[in-house]
Length: 162
Image: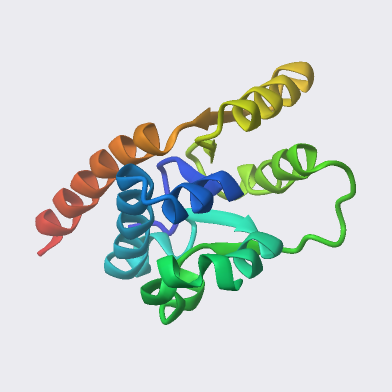
């Protein structure tokens, strides 16, 4: 078995974590699914399933977020893998696209930016369309559906090997 992860990877924007803070069931389920898959299939996917910026990881640790994320804090980097954020300048949407695009060469799958807020999705989609970036943008619900398919494929793959 090669070490290349062939499925989509997901880049979580701050809006995903905001939705968890608002008790959005799909966003909560998405974060838990990502953590479980990172843990269960670590040998195959490592932490390639979720990326976000360090400032978002730090924001989640702030007091206003803390109660919603207490269980996640113990899992540390399994929430998401932070990117270096000091080398890319520009507004947050441009930086999100740049962070995500830098991951495109490491995997066979498509990098998908997960955002649940309409304005964030529109702004990011404009940047993607303008420069024809090979990125997708999906909602928490769409990402969750895809993760469920990926999880089933990974289970099938490991069952066949056993």
